[in-house]
Structure formats: structure tokens, C-alpha cells
Image 1: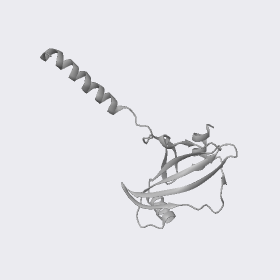
Image 2: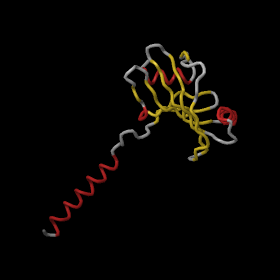
Image 3: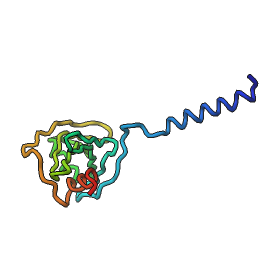
Image 4: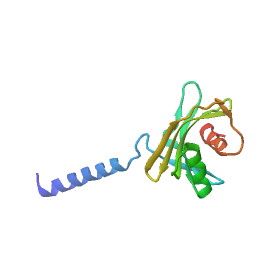
Length: 143
């Protein structure tokens, strides 16, 4: 093979590899912003959305504290001394307009500070029109 025929083939292979590396990975995090809360910014990971055969839809929601009050609130939820961001696994039943939070993770930067399974005493709670649960339901249920 001549040097001139080899060059375009190598270049084509390199471009194909580069294109494959830039494609979105299935299940990768793709966060969309939710309306800001009083002491935090929230976003929903659309890559984590799972529709269950029985009807409910679940997704991870990230809450980042935007001030000291937000940080104190997150830390109090986990009984932790540090942490500025948390992920919550929301499950929404679109038919009954109820939600549940089953898992939570608290972070300080990239470090996981605390993880917990949440045993929701009240079970499913009603989604109200305002607040984070309402915004999550709006995104997951389409209205």
C-alpha cells in the first residue's frame, strides 16, 4: 500500500473513532434546570428517568445549596456536618399525582458525604402545584 493510500484510511479511522467518543452515552447524566427554590438550585437528570410497568416514573433530582441557609438545610436532612449538594431519587405516580423520595446522597464537591435509604412514613405524598415535587412531576408527567 502506498503512503498516499494509507494516509486517508488512517485519517478516516481516526475521525470515526473521534465521532464515536463524542456520541452521548446511554444512561449518561444529562441535567435540565428546574426553577430555583428559595435556598437552592435544582436540576433533573433526564438520563436517569425510568418508567415502571405499573405506571410510576422515577428520576434523580440534584439540589445545590445557593446560600448558607440552603447548606444548613441539606446538612440537617442528613445529620451531617458538611455538604453542599444532594441527589434525591423521586418517584412520581402521574395518574394519582403523588410522589415519594426513596434514596438520597449528600455531597461536598465530588466527595460523597452521606447516603441513605429514606423510609417515608407517610408513604406517597400529594404533589402540590408549587415546590420542587410539583416541578419534578411537571417534567416527568408532561404537565
